[in-house]
Length: 243
Image (cartoon, rainbow, N blue to C red; front, side):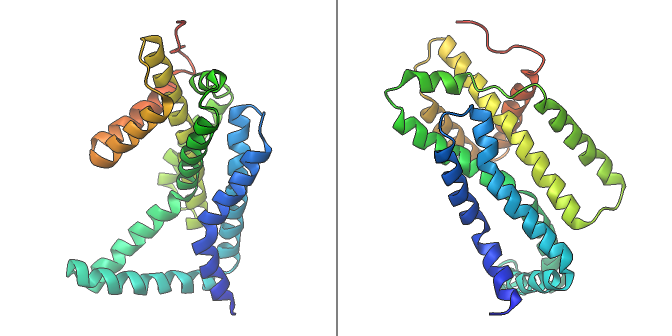
């Protein structure tokens, strides 16, 4: 097996390995505070991601070979589907590639949150204390500095040329940090629904939101931004009023 084989295998196995290692960490951190537990569960994915970024930076020729191999497959497939020129499809590939590379860690995070939330909800379906933990999920105040700092860097990097590897890393860290606030927004939404007398479970609410995001293009973006906005706003304004 040559080095290219290992790189291709690593690309294909990154997300499955990250989820498996994350599951192992989740099981072995039972009893820890929820935010810390989530951060530890994401740690294997972050380490693997940094490893891949480092390897592709150290071996640029291999990285370019892998990239061009994917480009050939992409061009061959979509040229037939869209009946567009090879140059247009190749340009589309560059855009899609950077987009996909920028959401690797957020995808892992979303998978971890959804799968483990459903698992924990089923395991503690008769335990009211679990429900209280969900509606009281709260990020530490120091987290807002990471959030604002990363978005500030994201703003200013538009005016300077930075290596693609650094750009991809910043995109992943920023979006993952942002999703943490989306999760806090979900917790606040569930809390306020309970405060108003709704009996909807967290599982049903999450399922409803996922369905709406899948079926309503445009509205899904508004829903995500609203949850994130609520989560961030809670840093300065207490949005969980007493029952």
